[in-house]
Length: 316
Ligand SMILES: [Zn+2]
Ligand SMILES: [Zn+2]
Figure 1 (cartoon, rainbow, N blue to C red):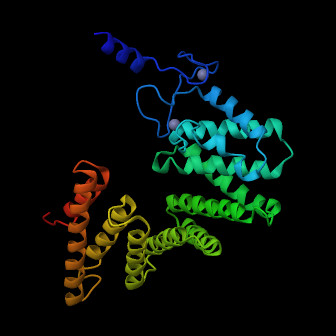
Figure 2 (figure 1 turned 30 degrees about the vertical axis):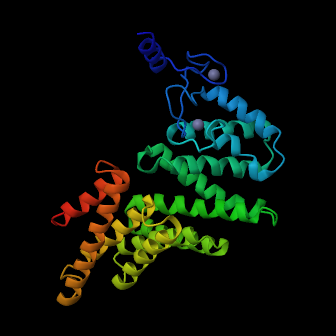
Figure 3 (figure 1 turned 90 degrees about the horizontal axis):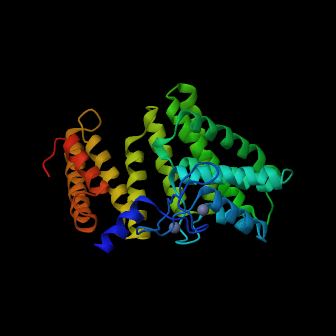
């Protein structure tokens, strides 16, 4: 009986690991968490307590590279904060930099980039205001990065620039106008170039897929090339994460879906269409078998595979 009473109280009232209180902080927020901490009590913290802690940490940080670390990673599980919690913390980070380092353009770039990553992490859940903010920050970063970039931290600034192009391309895609389409392609092209300059193979692969998808949205796609970009993405993930990696299965499913789509007589002569259809179906079945075994039948990755089966009127 005592055990269940304890479990109940910790479920309804979580304690902040920093101040040991469970009520709302001065701004009215209850302790929250959005990292990889698990269990009924680990990792819960008031946003204001975490901001105080991160301010203290970053004041003593020696390197520019680590300045944002305590504003992005949970000190308990050392994983990134996610979702709205990450966005709120990044907003506190910007306020901290504006207050304490108002004339430091480098730190301004770093906190803006942290905010942009947090907002991008919301994927399709972002509000119209947040989308506008992403565009504003992305443009500001492209303007500021060349002014503050140093040889010493070249790689960090290049990847900030790449992320700005990624965000601006993603936002342009949502406009669904021909002007937006042009900007989308140009930003994804720049994102690819930055990754090539950095030599990030996973980034290059991802950028190629974004660019190929963008071109196909605009109708200017060479199907053979498009398929080979997705095949390459799948194969490189097999190398990086193994056949059972979540990203591998995701890429394999996407490639199978495109094989099925382009097996339609509208896109391919009959013999080629039949070949693509068989290849697509084989790959999709393989992805399903692995996904069910590794993640189970109710996992999002498995459900995504089932959706492709249903939409293509195929029997699993
Ligand atoms: Zn607290
Ligand atoms: Zn944590």
